[in-house]
Image (cartoon, rainbow, N blue to C red):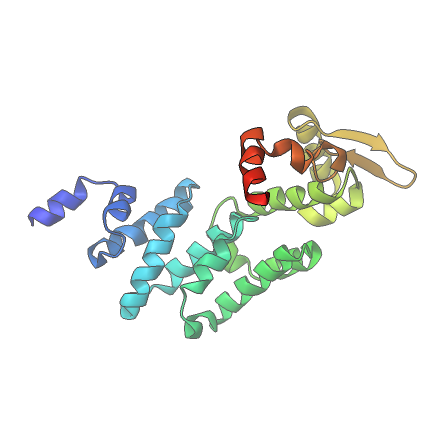
Length: 226
């Protein structure tokens, strides 16, 4: 009883930090996953801790909770969260249909095949719609990928990547012009969206490696070479 009262005085994050392998916190971690979904927050460490506990107590594994963890991990791209979580999930669980679908979706995102991603996602709304903010998170990831490649994105390319068209896309563009530094130009065939400059779409902004090495590091190298 004393242990339960003591546990209640800690946050889930603190319980994970103290002892992430304590099976007594499994229920708390499951509840925390649901809190992350409803509050649109995210804690990878807590979710990984829960997946590790499921490895030790497979009979307590909740397929619904695992699915929510993986959807939240997809939303964290381009981070490696999905792969980190998947590594802790037993193979026989991964073979369930909903997990096979999430793995396919992950592959489409990793390879920037956004049209295929949105087509597949549309067929599996029952898995994805339970997690608020999913579409917005993937749209942000798609824009991130485009910004690594394009200085100017043709409107149809952007529309396909974020799965927005027509008036909804007009409003989306207006928002980003006002808040994200986007500029819209008229192209020969369609609008061009000029994205903010970065070291990937403007390589000249990338600092020379030699310029980033502190002088004291260079002086340490010379005695080694001599």
